[in-house]
Image (cartoon, rainbow, N blue to C red; front, side, top):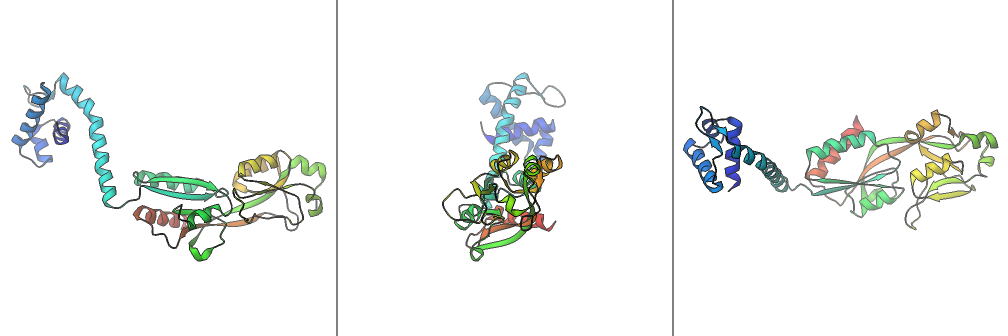
Length: 290
């Protein structure tokens, strides 16, 4: 039994005719008939009832058809994979993303892109501060989306989007302590992000001389602030509901106020993208332009 015989068999079932199948496969009708005859001899059953005007499947033929559908699907996937290999498409692309980045439009693009390049695995990693830049410069990751840029000479950088960072505090704490000045705010911990390594990074919006509580996760930071254990900056799209429902108070005190933070798309200048990576870079660039 060969894949070619299965292709011929399924084409006859699809066309309901040996003659039409031979036309679509660009073969002679005797060649089509011989292929099926050999298959039936190997299986020792008749797959088609030829006593009618059009060939119909026997009970054995129906069973064989159902069992071989998956085989042909897998074969067609292998054929597509062969095409992917021939085009030198990368088996995997790794994208490092700063945790503050707004994601809905990006993830929608990633979904459609993954469907188009189904043989390239897209791996996403969410990081903070300098970690995205480090991974791209070290070529551990193909692309990065981050606000933190400290070595522009090593990177190709494109503006991608922006996020509004909002300094917030628990609303009840704000009212109870009557926080109306920077000096009063300094008596509470500022919840800031710290890297997962000992490397010194820049945290956003640090209040000089204030107390600080460093964490390594945005969700944990948000929960600490909601619990009334401190204050800090969070992306507006993450806390919009809590602000609207009165759980969080937006701070607007001299140097502590909402700020727009630019987010960049980055890749290493030394790293040459493959065809899929190049296509993704173009897609992400066009997403920014929209």
